[in-house]
Amino acid sequence: MPDSEREAELLDAERTLQAAQRAGDVAALDQLLVDQLIAVGPDGRQFTKREDLAAHRDRTSVIEDLVEEELDLLVAGSTGVTFFVGRVTGVFNGEPVTARLRYTRTWVHDDPHGWRVLAAHISPV
Image 1: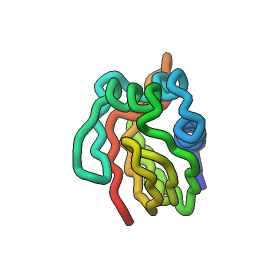
Image 2: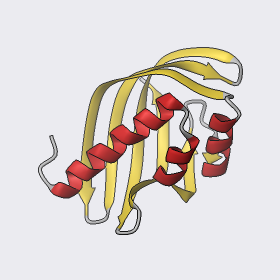
Image 3: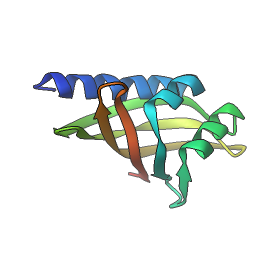
């Protein structure tokens, strides 16, 4: 459970991101990801914000269900990290996928934007 206002805001941002992923909401994802985003997918490949948004926009990445099992976080100044474990069902590059995944996201906070994802790593659990 968050014990500070900044932690509560990070928890809210993480849950907002999850909702945007489920909805395929490209506009919300655009606001929640920094332009310099680098993410590593479960297959080990890196992708950028532009590539991630394009996959959601083109519907080559569709998250049909995202069920949170665990969520921990930590905040140090204007940097935060969320540790999400959950079940994900969707279609990725035309292939149906069901997996239990761990998302580790590094977030940065600034006053005009709030919390946004700078880096992410996704791995099977």
